[in-house]
Length: 75
Image (cartoon, rainbow, N blue to C red; front, side, top):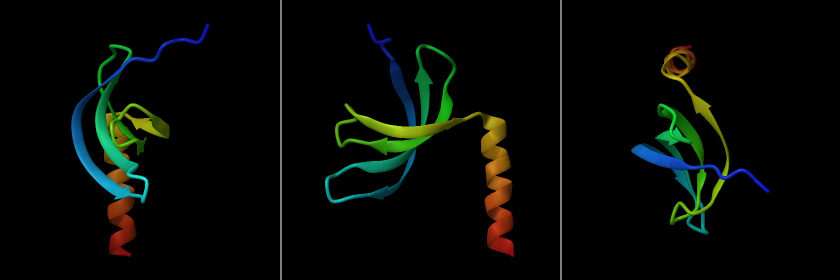
């Protein structure tokens, strides 16, 4: 039997892109299986019933990513 994954989108941060079928690449704050929320970047179906593979990031990882991206823009 497959393990059930429960999630709650606690905050929608923003949408990075969308495609013709309505799927969107979103950055959200999500609680997975009742754990404290983490930043999550992945593709979502229009009704959020299906999702693609993604990555989750802690606050510290988001801060590090921000520094990297800002450095890329300033070069």
